[in-house]
Image (cartoon, rainbow, N blue to C red; front, side, top):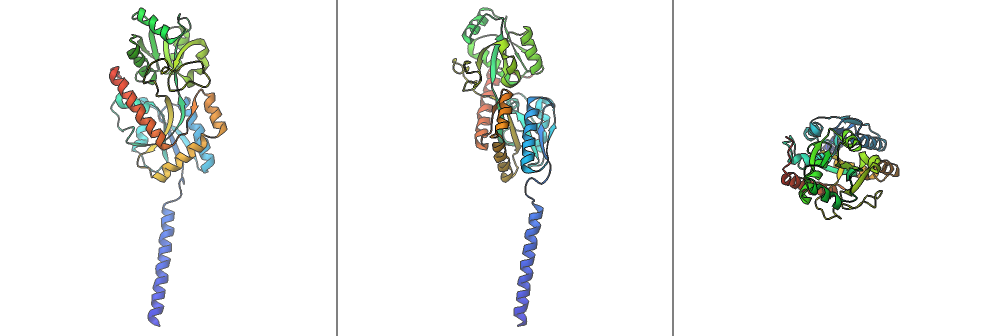
Length: 325
């Protein structure tokens, strides 16, 4: 009887120990999120990237009942903030909210991280086509006439950009390559001075971001748009692809990334949440009011976009011999 009693006692003790261990494991791994989440924006406050990040942060905070803050970490073309996330803890509490420049820089500079191998893509939040515009005083009405005019006047016409290595730069050089034009590249420090130069007549043409420059479009002649589809709010403007040009399909975008080693359940939770947020009517309305197209695709779809975009940009940079020097 004593042996049986002892065995029962040991079994009971073992069961209690197992329950204690399980409880301890649960306490050691609280349900995500259990602390403040940081959306790292590698650009200054006040721009479109910052505005979109703050909108997402607020919606996420309301849903998860956990503080979500935006931290602006500008510098070195966005690489400082991106590197902070890439090399930081892969626990889901530090998220990169950045733009397509993340991929373009792969072929332009030596980076302390690999934009494809070191990040787990979550989703695009918004998509921004580029519109090729010329000054209203230029005597052309379509892209074919512009090409003919530039070729007939070597060295006379220019295209402005937000700076060396930007989407506008790559697109302008690609247009030169495919048409045989010799438009001179004139870089500016950002969108505001570029648009100002276009309005003032100092520039003859530019690829303008549809989001930041939309309100100025009526003052220019618009000759084409990037991407595979026309803009819903500019249905009369043909794509560059429709006009016989190639490799203009990649679009500007604003997207979310986590460090690649982040646990899959955490990545999945972010993916589901972002897709939910981007289906909200009020969110879509705000994004569209900025002249942007709402995103919200799956992780796999975004990963395919990233791979395709990176290959196109690498070819353009190589073929046009674009450098940052």
